Amino acid sequence: MEVADQMEILLVEDNPLDAEMTLRGLKDQNLDSHCVWVKDGQQALDYIFRKGIYSDRTNSDPRLILLDLKMPRVDGIEVLRGIKADEKTKRIPVVVMTSSQEETDIVASYDLGANSYVVKPIDFKGLMSVARQAGLYWVGVNRPAQR
Picture 1 (cartoon, rainbow, N blue to C red):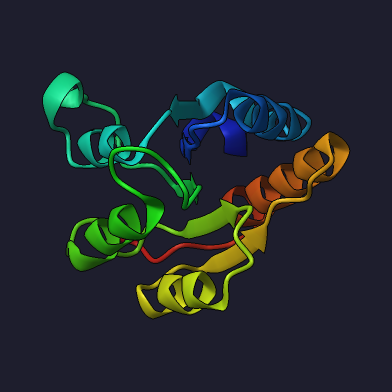
Picture 2 (cartoon, rainbow, N blue to C red):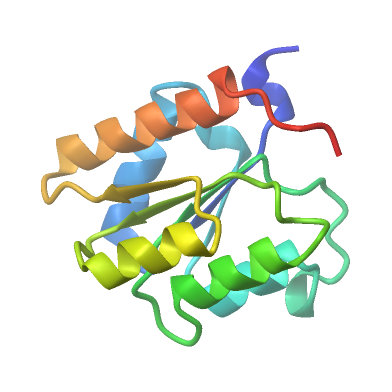
């Protein structure tokens, strides 16, 4: 079984253009077919904790979460706080991919347990490259702890 066949990536991104470029970058590594895209922080929490429309989700937890910070309803900091505070999800790698270069966001993300903080490049090729590299490393190279 290929690495991509057994992985799932949760993309939490409210900007459709950024999501499309991220998915294209993941496609370059054959990681896009097992990627779920949610459009805000509340959807992310519902997906991760199997609530609301995701209450009967049966697939396993994501192996990687690509998380934007600046989103409607629930921001990325709150999503990260929820993921890392729960015993069942705290080991899921979270890569913050955001346009924010604010030091307070960087510090808060790492303090809450983010595994990486990446400022999104403003050009599409750069964003695709970042997504490709993040997906390949966290899903193909990194060895997660067994739960």
